[in-house]
Image (cartoon, helix red, strand yellow):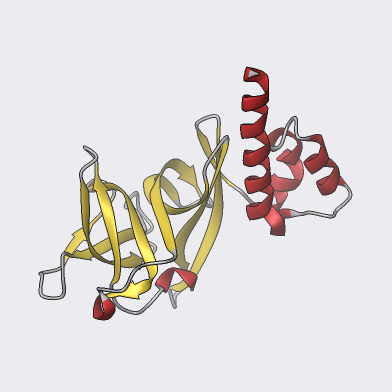
Length: 194
């Protein structure tokens, strides 16, 4: 599962709910709880010798992890990072409703695309789902939802809609579709100012 990075701690930081930034090392954890408890949390250490602390959505509001810097090479300059934020009030199936949980931010703009990680089955195999947020509403993005709602999701971006209709792009391209739409939408705002 791409969430695992290394099996240990990666360099990163988190933000408290009052916007205080705390740097150190984070280990990402994930397991389905089949309750209103979040499936995702972080184990944090300030440095190699520090005691570990578990952090959940009620402790912190977001975190950033550098994928290429572990606790054993803590002096290396990080290159690639992933950001995680809290998604609120979403359902991934008939049984799993989340008042809030962490999700990886894929792209942020008029549409925010997240990957929500969880586990499934008796073996607790890792899995993920796309979540999409537009107009302050977070929804599970399935293939069916994409087919039914893509015209509303990407409303106004005619070139993108035509590429989806002609099957040049599909649900499997959702990350690049959202990025393209957000860039286009941002340009529309700057064009209307001039």
